Length: 559
Image 1 (cartoon, rainbow, N blue to C red):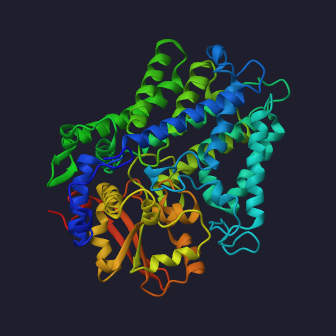
Image 2 (spheres, helix red, strand yellow):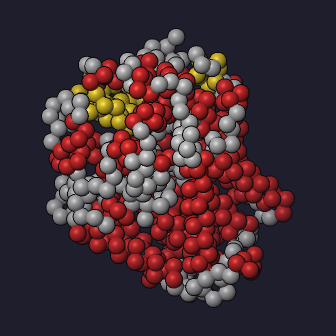
Image 3 (cartoon, rainbow, N blue to C red):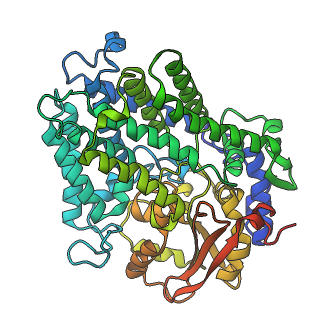
């Protein structure tokens, strides 16, 4: 094996791809259970280098502020309020360039390893406007206006970072223009992590403006704390479901630090025949949920002293576990930012409480962003992105599968894009057998999650003969069509299908999509739809989550 070669699956990939889909799914899922994605160690080193770049560039941008940026005295300035503000602005720039979440081979992005600016600066690429069909701003393709607004935001971010002090005028311009970008292409608002970075920018810009000129210049810390507390709380709340134990299994099987076969096998009831989560996996899921809920509960009331230390230790345990698993989508830098935020906000300023936000329009805005949207996203997940609802890592996400008849996928070349078909990307590095082996794990990743157990029942409803179709994850399609993907199935659902169809003109039956929605909180079903790119809706219905819990990933009916 070469340095960049993935772990070969325990089957012949070329023989595997000729098997019926159910058999392929069984073999791939059993392989995932003991191998995960099979990522070579060298790939993790690339992500480690990217993380070092992220931290190093933050230090460099801090150096433009007098008294900050000196590595020799970093202990004296790293918790400075301006250093935290620059960390938020730099994280926003990092993500909007496409360097953060959704980059690299762990998101099926091989060459180029990023999308981001390669798409967002390029007129003609596909976008998802909020007001679809509206004159000037509602088309499915990016215009010079879209690219110019994006470029302006990038310039503003850099200008803010190299300024000695962050000006309110800079913040206001960023708040307005990023919101405008989200109207022009809602993908970009998610890229900007609107629920975290953009909301925190709003806090920076408006936290003191209603308190008068004598307001405490650090009053925005209360608002920033509210944002971070919401991130932890709703992430924990969203795991109060039956999906999360399967996530623990998938992550443990893929973690670079749990490569022991006996550890991975214990995540399942009876490997290889019963791949439902074991009692140990359920226990780990419950403990993880309790930990994620405990962090904000402790920190919101910690006045300092022992309580604050306990909260910080719990926080470090939580994010160390998440980061060590290197979850697919690789939100590593985001986790680092959250950890840093805990120190810069809670550790450095335990005296600031949420009450310091005061009754103001900003308070109403934060209630809307940090309470109303997450509640709506849990109760009516079809209406809110899982990112805006802060339902991270819960396993209860919407997703889509795109099925291309024969070689009809080649029509995607009619799109303006920077990324090729994933098979063609892999061909630059691997022989066909290795590439097929890797892509078999993409199938397994989806089906090992609880919601993926809908596919053995739904795929035969979508097409008459699955062997005539090329199976593609909606995540991968979003990556090559939109330039970004990070687990949000709404990005590659009906609106993207309409945009792709307008440009590629698939015939009836050439492209069928299976869209599965997240499970609403308190409900026992998940909605699904089957849509033809040319003909529209074919069929829709709901599946019982209890029945999916009783199935193996490759089974259409419970045992």
